[in-house]
Amino acid sequence: MFVIQNVLMAVVSVLSTLLNLYFWIVIVAAVITWVRPDPYNPIVRALRMMTEPAFYYVRKWMPFTYRAGLDFSPVVVLLAIQLVDQIVVRSLAQYAASI
Image (tube, rainbow, N blue to C red):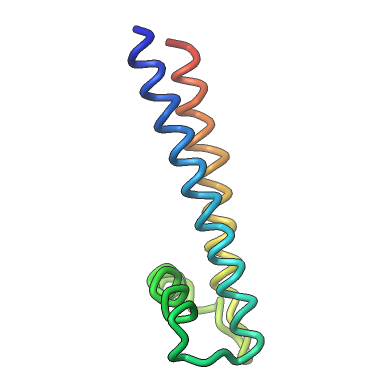
C-alpha cells in the first residue's frame, strides 16, 4: 500500500513541477512579445514552439480572447494551468494521502 501511495505522491510532485514550469514559460513568452524580439533567436523560437500550440487552441475555441490587437490567450492558459493545479493535482494528492 505504501508503494502505491509513494508513486502517486511522486506523480503529484512531478505534475505540479511541470505545471509550475509551464506557467513561467507562458509568462516569459507573453512578456517577450512586448519587446518585439528577433524571430530567429533560438530562445524565442523555443518559447514559441512550447506556447503557441496552447495559445492557438485558446484562440480557436475562444475567439473573443483576441480583440483590438491585444491577445488575452496567455491569460486564459495561465488560468487553465492554475485550475488544473488546484483541482486535479490537489485531488490526486489528497487521494494518495488517504490510501
